[in-house]
Figure 1 (cartoon, rainbow, N blue to C red):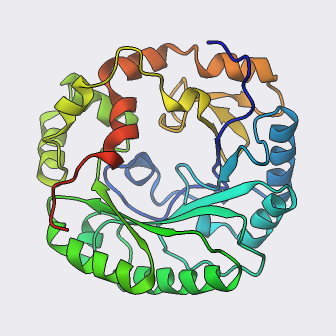
Figure 2 (cartoon, helix red, strand yellow; figure 1 turned 135 degrees about the vertical axis):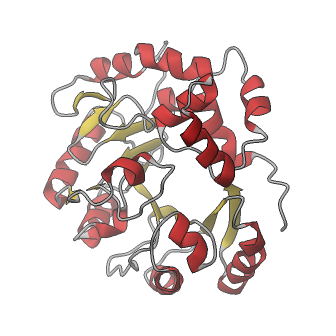
Length: 313
C-alpha cells in the first residue's frame, strides 16, 4: 500500500478501559470477558501514548479525533476528567460512545468533543435483560444527567442515540425516538449485528454451529446480510487500514478494531517499541485481513449502520 501523502489517521481509538460491564451476547466483550476484572489505562500512560502517537504523525490536531473506546466502556474510567484534560491540552478532538451505565460528570471543558454516542439495546427492562443486562431506568437517568453536564461544560455538537434494533424490540422504537426529540438527541437506529469476529466469520462462511445459528436467527435481523456482502466492490479498501488506528488499554497497537485481543493476529506490538513504518506495514499485511475481506465481515460491520432499516419510525 502506498502511504505517500499520509497525514495521520482520521480516527484513533484508544481503549482507556480494558473491559465492559454489559453482558451483550453478540459482542466479544460481553460473550467472553463479562465478569472479569476491569482495568484502566492511567492518565500518565495515556498522556505518554498521545505524545508517542503525535511524534509518529498518527494523531494530528485538526486531522485526527481520539475515541476513548473500542471494546471497553469508557465511563468506567476512574479519572475521565484527567483523560479529557490531556486531550484538551494537545488540542485533539475527542469522541466517546457509552452504554450510559454511569453518568458523565465532567468538570473540564467538553467543547473539544467531536461527537457523543449513547448505545442502547432497546427501550425497556425486558430488552435490557436480553442484551446489556443493565438497569434500564438508570441508563435513561444517566443519559439525561450526562446531556445536562455536557451542555453545561461547553459541548455544542449533536448527541446521538444508537438504538440497536433486534427482532424483539421494534415496538420500542417510537418511544425511544420520542425521548430523543424531547431531549434534543439525534436518532440513530440500526440493525444489531454480530460484534464478535469469530462468530461473524463462521456465520458468513456457513460454518456456524446449529445452536448458535438458531440463537442469532431469533434475535438479529439477517435478511439483508447476503445482499449487502454480495455488493462489496472487488477493490473495496477496509477503512481500518488508512482510516482508523486502534490501541488497547496497554498501549498495544492492534491490527484493527474488530479482532478480539485473544486472536493471534490482533496485537502488532507496543506503540513505544514499533516504528512508524512497522506499524503502517503490519496494519495491511496480515493474512487475516484477506480472510476477513474475503468472507465480508469487515464490509458488513462498516456498512450496517447505513442500511435502510425499514422498521417503524
